[in-house]
Length: 485
Image (cartoon, rainbow, N blue to C red; front, side, top):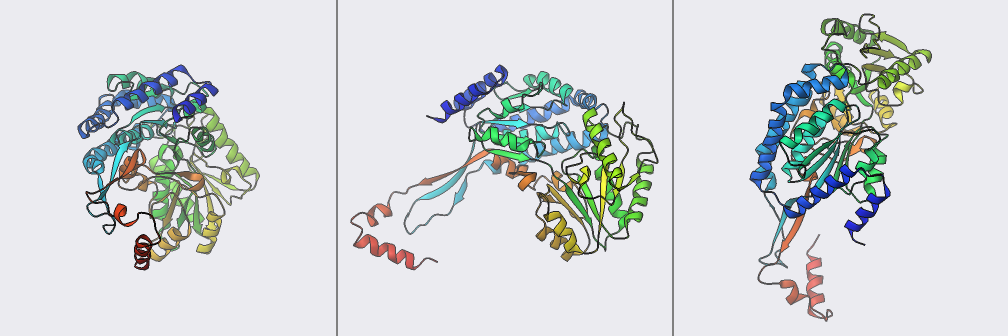
């Protein structure tokens, strides 16, 4: 049974929406008809992606705002538009170099005149499953790499991005044919069907609980996956580092998008005895930056379910003995607007909900420590995080944490910003994900790096290694082995 028949049988086993099946068939046929787009065609696709964003900026911002209830316009423009346009520009700038065949070394002793090459070629049809927290960034940034690599793409948006998904589904055909790019609404429960399509690669960004199910669906088709999951990313404030500066940098990231970022700081380690100072600086910062959490600058929690989950987690921590500090000068949660005041949680314990799963909101548990090994042991006793954030001017201490704690990525003396560096790969490890994309790594992920050997006019192996082997062939082979290693 060939791969196409296997894929067809699997499609029949799930409740596959006709629009998924039909689009996949069109894109696969288009790929087979034109499997290797030229440099100029790929560059045009990247420019068209950029034009789609620029020409519809206001409508896209408004759609995201409607999905959130209130999304800070600055956060949308900075975290989505600016970063994505930079990503597209980076891909366009380096595309010619990325597409260039690579010359690899060859053993000239056996193959005089032969040569080796590695040619990056398009995989075909790539599926992208997008979460709601940065829906433009996490769809268009992968698309930059997917199109740079010469592929076609089907993109399924989140059920919490209904307005944006509707808008993109309307806009996309004005810029790309559907056999090149198509956006889909979730429609409720359609994720398993989408991930069951026999894509040539599948990128999923989302929760660690959903990731294994996506991978299992893809595995039935032997579809390779890139999983960008979450995790409890820690920040560690070293004893030499200014508590004031740490508070400023940590709280900026913790409040961005109301903490709803997969690479956000999920808890912080402070040197014992500095927690009151840290809390004092955090209160001052919130009073300066968000005197009223009902302002448009403060983003809402995405939906009622997430809001209730944060409320329940805080109450669970209080009941189990934690000290809660409302940083928003006593402002109460607003159920109608879903504006959740930022909180610090002192003395968290392992049995609290906040320490058992990714928080994804403006709540920051604080642990204290006496010794750096204590920090390492705690982090390593849990799933590997998507990010690690050591704060210290001591290069030896920085290196200690980087060497002893494995994570997807690292920002030193800052948080989050490693994700925005175009020449750094982005990806998790272990429970926080697998695979990389961004820049050259993204191009490689969505390409087949195809090894090609070209024989020269003279084939030494045919002359030297013909049976019977007992004579000349064995002597030559033993001689070659002798001089290796």
